Image 1 (cartoon, rainbow, N blue to C red):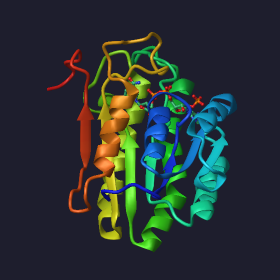
Image 2: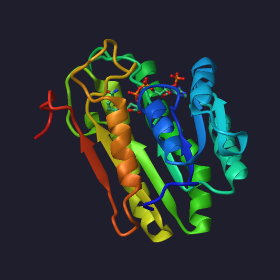
Image 3: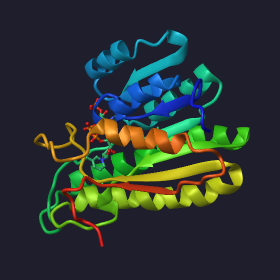
Image 4: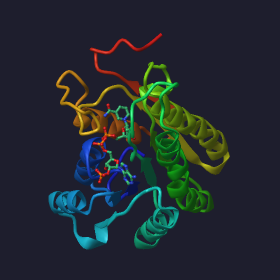
Amino acid sequence: MSDLRDRAVLLSGATSGLGRALALRLAAEGCRLAVCGRSPGKLAALVADLALPADRLLARAFDLTDRAAAAGFAEEALARFGKVDILVNNAGANLGKASVGEADLAAFAAMLDLNCTAQLALTQPVWRAMARSGGGRVVNIVSSAARFSVAGIAGYTASKTAFDGLTGVMRREGKPLGIHVTAVYPGGIDTPFRAQARADYLRPETVAEAVVGLLRLPAEAAAHELVLRPPVEDNFA
Ligand SMILES: NC(=O)c1ccc[n+]([C@@H]2O[C@H](COP(=O)([O-])OP(=O)(O)OC[C@H]3O[C@@H](n4cnc5c(N)ncnc54)[C@H](OP(=O)(O)O)[C@@H]3O)[C@@H](O)[C@H]2O)c1
């Protein structure tokens, strides 16, 4: 898939940070885009910046943990473009940093829901369509939190590690179906995800560039994983 022109891409979490950078980058590559986010206002700003004709853009605001909305959006994208060539599961959040002894169970469960179960809900209709049509590409934005345990981040780490496990099974099951699955493990990115600006972290445009680079690799290259950390981090073995 070296040329991304006219590829139909479904991208979640497109209203902010990495997802927004990726949406703009993929539009510049000539992709057709189905983008979603939670905030209608931020989605409207993205739509204005993308400036794509209606037949090349589908944009919907909804909460990804709403199962019917997630599945409905995936079905709408498939109907609009006739297929989805590339699915990027990017939406995610840290709903509260807490240690094991102090973690709020409701926040913990909500993170497992958003960062893992909701990803599957959005993926399933696309996955079935890809399987029927002979394949596709799935990129899951996990986190370096799934590869290196940091004290005090129990819920987010557990939820991203669950998503990582799901990604591994997707890769196995996708192989005979022609669905190629890539896990991306970013370290710190300077986005609104962070409570404070971090100029020493990765720029979202840099991570978007790396994801597009993976997508442009020819079909014989199965990129299973990409780990990308800012030089300031040393959370590796
Ligand atoms: N920033 C980092 O340091 C870092 C590091 C490793 C991995 N990641 C992961 O990278 C991905 C992108 O994060 P980011 O840094 O770009 O964060 P961000 O700027 O906060 O963007 C997160 C995106 O996810 C959407 N989202 C969050 N909760 C949602 C929900 N319940 N329903 C629908 N959409 C929802 C947001 O929508 P709205 O803005 O419209 O609410 C937004 O578009 C996430 O999966 C995150 O976990 C981030």
